[in-house]
Image (cartoon, rainbow, N blue to C red; front, side, top):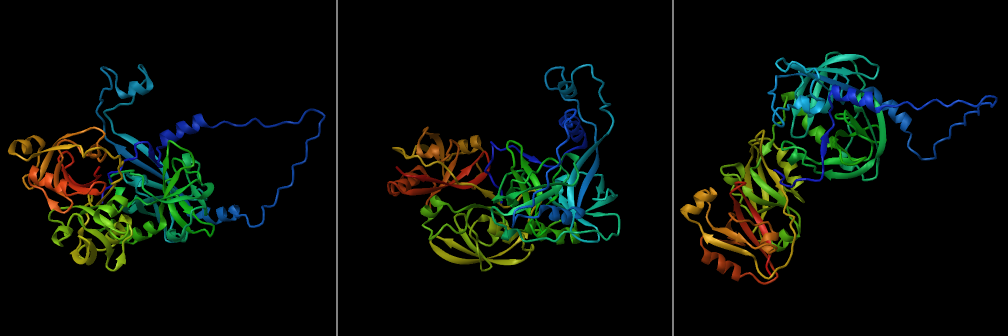
Length: 500
């Protein structure tokens, strides 16, 4: 379930950092404050007695003492193959661009060693450590440093790029101090939390803050897009905190620190611990996570969807398209269906459908309750196995709604020539848009020349005449739904336009 929504103003940074960068930051970013001295003949003032914390204030010091022994610093090494000396401009190569001409350069013909750093925490006394996938995914060698400065080698047990969770095990029997895993679903916005980790190679750094928000989707990568459900916190998280725990006041892990917003301050994000708990058993047993796969593109039910489909509420997930030959297609799920329950469990939004399907095993039969043409149906579907690089994608239907004097599209019948020019498959029927008036409702809705309108509300379109009659039957001021094929993206989706 892919999300097409892009965060162009957000520059999201993964928190893992190379040791080379760490060295430069540490060498250039630290300054010591001069020590103060008393004037001659003036006795030094006695240090003031420490203030007792206000009654009811969290005891962060005791919490840090309890959590720190279970937190580790993770250091990785991998070998980078020789790279092409690609030019930026004419005769300037990347090395000269950053360091200037005449500086001795490394031998680019040789393999180079690359180092990185992150964080992690023990989840069992026998040496299992949870960290981020992006910390260890390319590592050829992993070292772990404990709170007492003991260094141990570690190996990858399993990785899951979709949730950015990895499980590693140290090469020692222990026992080790581990952290209990809490319940991230019970977290409340405003609740105190503590982050512990290895930011900028400053091991076992403790920062505190609150839960700023829940359920954040950031679009960090294609792999994580469908599963992003981050906890946002203002506890300071920096490069190198990746994989470290976010704990509540009871010392329970509620999240795993994963990302920051490089464009802002105190905008850190953590994978919910309930997500971690769902994948760790499979990582331990299989080394990977196998998920159920439905084969649909879905979106949340917003006001436009509810009004257009005449739905009783905004609960459910609207099916935008169905993968041909996939489990949903074989189970007779159709575009326009609104999935409102899975196996009797209500679906309020796409996130719940994604979680329910992903938590089910491939080959499992599930019953989907759908609303189709205003009526409820039970549709049994046998799930497939989710592909590693693709799957159900969550998309956004949020668009501006600007009334205009006309719909603002010109259409033509599909011909052999128009199919060839726009690369439209033979199994796509409808009318092709030849022009869109600027600032019209169609333009505001994102329609573009080359799009194929396949359906208007519930009426299939095969000619200009069909299209004109279907549009003429739409009442002024009401919402019309167009089912559109976009050749450039090779994707089918619904477009909602309010008729003037």
